[in-house]
Image 1 (cartoon, rainbow, N blue to C red):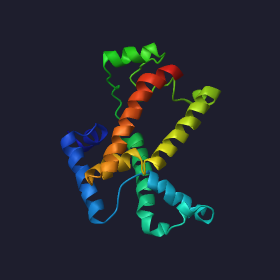
Image 2: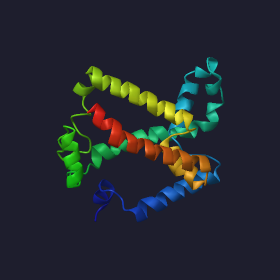
Image 3: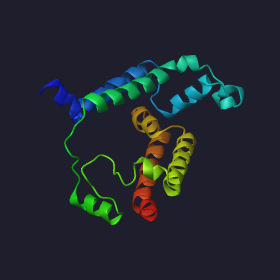
Length: 187
């Protein structure tokens, strides 16, 4: 297997898991925690929101690594999608394909369904409200839980923090409720 094939395919657990562990060890060793939502706080602080809200009034220069991380994630996503695309169609179980078809979503082997994720859907009132209300709930939930899914599930659980365990259980319960109760009502 050449390097391009290795990079463009999902990595097996025995490669990805230890890599995540090494990153977490380095963050713990340096006294830092991992999470995406804290980067938004840094961006708001850099933009001057600290003049208006005490929550954003802190020394963001100590946390500049968060901004570097976000830039790296964006660049990594661009590089992966531009140069290391896996053109194999996505494989789903027949049960999932049947469940999607009941909701009016045709599975065509793509990662995201075109019936939901397209510019025309966003231009409708329903699509716009879903994005705005969904974004509000994600932002509110991340703030209320004291962090986002990545922060709690990766960093908090690796630190054996009980609040992170409770938050992750809540994230899963919320996801199940959304998938089985709310999503069918919307679509």
